[in-house]
View 1 (cartoon, helix red, strand yellow):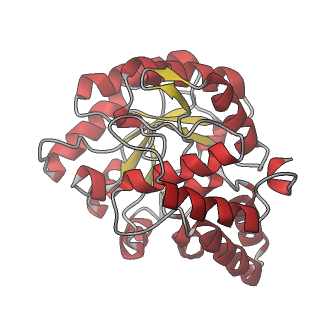
View 2: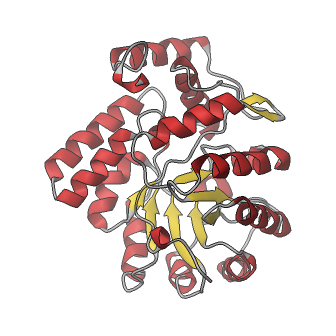
Length: 313
């Protein structure tokens, strides 16, 4: 099976793109075009659609399919486009994978189903099915806070031997898990290990991760790209400086210990104030509160993200 050489292994910064909505059943087309160009202008290495930040599992299948089609057409061959196919129904995951391939995507990304309990044996059988049935390379998505199950590190090791399984994105937030996976797949030179939480990006790269999937890159895509470049150049003090800036910028948006919908509503509000897209969320989630909005707006203003600033150019 032929694949994009940029996926072997996939490296760099792969933002999990938010999904701009005009209503619960329709995309914000202008906002979608704007957010894609905004992110690409930061020099990112790929895009990830329909992940947690993209509210994938909360969207109708019609909206998901249209999003895939529109983004793949807009991006063309500029960077790889990865598509989340996570679903409670195995067959629906395969249908999304088929649509992603038809639309011109580069790969698909799948987390475990999130309703029925599954064993590691079940997961390995599921991975084998995804890999066998998908026309595109498959990346695993470890998101235990939402799916209630980990891809055990040894399951990842076994999966790395399956043809058409190209890597894993880990959003567990546990650097010890990431290190164990890296150790177990170290001899698999084309198998990518990517980190989700952006506050771990610098540490993960130093441990051997191939890149990151930072949600804050929807707002400031150039910063994680600069961090990754500093890593490649061995400028480790510069890495830590940029990492601290990213964490500080994200403080009013990413607040640990609350429902994941919280950071999405604040992220979307920030983007709406930057005139990028609407701040509507998929149901049943609410938009940012007046207090949250005030804090975020003041933060964006202080960092020059509103008005005639570098963030808007």
